[in-house]
Length: 131
Length: 126
Image (cartoon, rainbow over all chains, first blue to last red; front, top):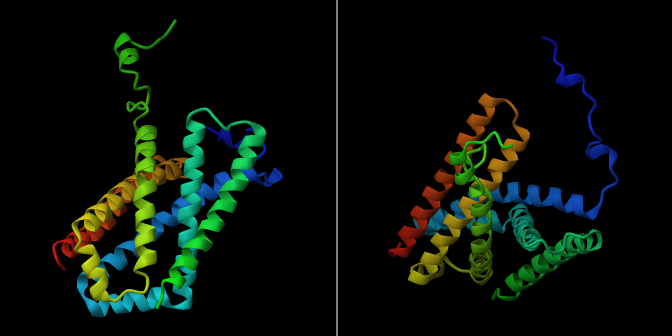
């Protein structure tokens, strides 16, 4: 039997659409979710290092404190904030509110603006508390 | 005229036999995650510069240890549900799908076992 489904016409897909804030935020929500999934390894590593003793804790902290480590943690902070605000948006949508064309666009921009702002504030707070 | 049996209709679980279970659990853990993750982030900000002894002392506090445990369970549960959707969307082969869905659960449980063991050890005094 020939593969019938392969020859069927496809509906327009990602590459033919001009990016809109709602669709970009939808994809970013999924990407940040997957990134947070992988990042649980960092959380587990930090906790098991703390539980193992001062030497392993210092080693993991040095890794996280390096330039690359800090960049990863900065990205992880943003991913968490973005996924949280995106999730709040979804919870509002679940009630049937905010689904209009203009409201949902505003939600999209608020999500990106909010996540960047919160990330900056968290890192400013982190550096301010350093002695 | 419906082709569904009266029993199927009254159960309301549909063809996947689990109804809105996945959707509901994802929302439940999402709501729980908000305060738990905020606590986690504030904790990390507060202890980002801390020594090992200070972190151990902080996690020896029962409240902190319990909230950390809840954060891990709720976060990991939510993460497993979300990844399940991603895998079901992109992995099309039946065999491969079963394998990656199993790996999703194994990963979640492995990370949870390690992280919860660490939190319990620290919670009981290092």
